[in-house]
Amino acid sequence: MRPFGTTIFAEMSALAVRTGAVNLGQGFPDTDGPPEMLAAAEQALRGGRNQYPPGPGIPELRAAVGRHQQRFWGLGYDPDGEILITAGATEAIAATILALCEPGDEVVCFEPFYDSYAASIALAGAVRRPVTLTPSETGNFGFDPERLRAAFSDRTRLVLLNSPHNPTGKVFARAELELIAALCREHDVYAVTDEVYEHLVFTDSAEQHIPLATLDGMRERTLRISSAGKTFSCTGWKIGWVSGPRALISAVTRVKQFLTYVNGGPFQPAIAVALDLPDEYYQGFRAGLQDRRDQLAAGLRQAGLRVLPSDGTYFITADISDKSKKDGIGFCLELPERVGVAAIPTQVFYDNQEPARTLVRFAFCKRESVIEEAVTRLAGL
Ligand code: PMP
Ligand code: GLN
Image (cartoon, rainbow, N blue to C red):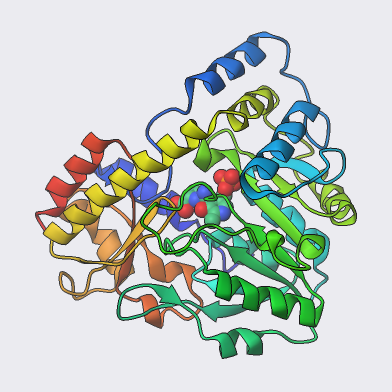
């Protein structure tokens, strides 16, 4: 683990605190989640639910996760054996990779990738085979199908896919997913999908969210991961889950029991309540973030930055080359002092940083007034 230093999120959040900058770096909301969920947590905290929950998660939460996937994606999973509650998506990803990979196995993933992927792959002694996402003229990120094909070998164990995608805001199109699925079937490998932004595809996106597990022959080879943090604005609660075929969930459970064993006793019943909220909650949540995206995009443009499209997630990307001679890392290290805003350099999520040297990620999961303040400050660029 020597190559893995402090995460960029911790580094930039600490810098934001030190300098009093508006923190558009680490992706966490600055409002609390739905009141029904908060009330349920309070009741659980005072109602004797503070001890270890069962290893796979409390039955009412597993049942709610099952209902939720059926309601939104038409995917049926048995809450008894096909759904495991985890300490956020992060633990689900780590436990899944540790469960499925032997040392030397290869993991095909798309770069830029969320930082815990590389670390989890390394912990398993596996090897990452990144396929690079690069922005086109229009700023939409895509990959070369031949490079994807070439990334597969007889050592490939699984494909790790995040859509909607952090940090780019890309939503993988059906044709892209079909190719990934075809390669998984051809090479008989597993897919692990990170769908924590499943409810954050904006209404003007050309693509809709399509869980890979819904494609032909994929349910049986896919472990589908999501979590409550993003959808219900409670990133600190760390309640996540993984769903998939019984034998695979059993293998992941084997590992998970020795990582955290269990977590979030009183928060589990609260997330069960949140998942069952009516469709209007989910629509309102998405509409609110879409407004904030548009507000921040306009502000970044006014500040003289070229803004790339964001179809989903909490994040939008800007190209800083018109405003700085430095690369994204240099720019982000000086931005808090220069104008009082913190952001994240996209290049740190790549092995091959070249396509992203001048790209910077800004989070818009913040109150309107906070984004307004950030935009005012960025005008000083
Ligand atoms: N995957 C992606 C793509 C993320 O952006 C995040 C961070 N929020 C996670 C996983 C981790 O989720 P959690 O906080 O539920 O562990
Ligand atoms: N997912 C959040 C982001 O991408 C950060 C989570 C973390 O700090 N590990 O900004």
